[in-house]
Length: 104
Image 1: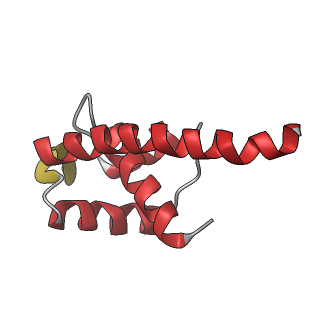
Image 2: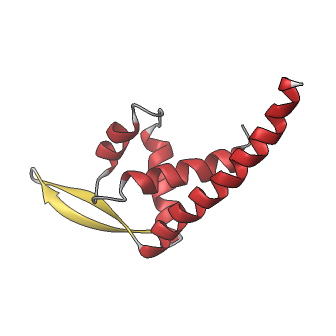
């Protein structure tokens, strides 16, 4: 898969994982595990990129005597998910066009 395409897909997956509730790194990986494997290093790279793009915010809270970073999606992040859903419809249309050659 094209690396840029994959990067964009993973960004949207991470945003989707925190769409309904703030979460922290380990929980995000756990929530996504039934759908895809992601290493911690990959996740934290994505989280930093999304924070820099103002698609999420970060706050530290104490949990069990340790600080834990919680991630919260912003309006810009929600907009990116909506944009992806629209783009995906176009991708599906292109896929159906390509697949029709197999039916001939």
